[in-house]
Length: 250
Image (cartoon, rainbow, N blue to C red; front, top):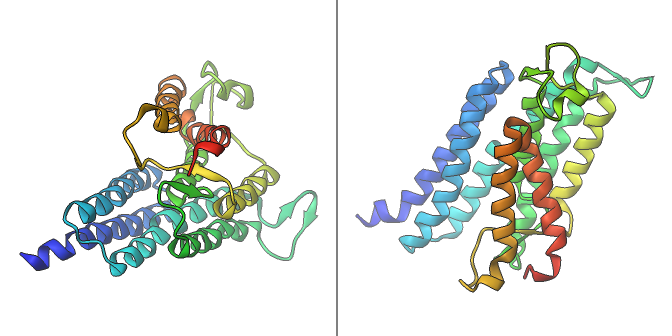
């Protein structure tokens, strides 16, 4: 029984890693629906491995390192691959210049900075009740959410997409320059000094949890109103609300 108790959380973490591997393979083949399911599963498992470890009092240095290694695939490789796929059609052309390499490989900057962010997080003892910089799961939701917008057909009557789509049914299109800008911003946010809200409760006092309440209510409303378009919008809202409540995050 002790063996199961001590390793149950690690098994859940490995489930996160397995889901991330499957998601990455399907993303390469263009099956974004399966990848989306794998990301959701990885998010759930990433939450529950820590929850189970705390509940069973089975926290360990091995578990902490294993968690980051699993996240590196599920929330580091997958967003890099998503940006790689979005940049792929542009070849080596950007800003009217012909580069000596295909710009799709710059999408993996997100993967590199995700790795750097996870390493920093492992060494930073301050991030108990808030995150410093955008956490990798949120960044994955942002980048993969943008990728979904380039894959899903929207009608011309859809709110917001009608502004940037053409025809009766179309996907949302982004220029190479916009995608590279998103890549740079995403990479910087991962290692930025900006404090971000973490859904970890230091106390149950209402005034101590205003940022979390505002985040939850806003996220639900955005998803209800904008549906698929709302997925990346939630992370943008998350960043904005975190900036608003900077002084309360500690």
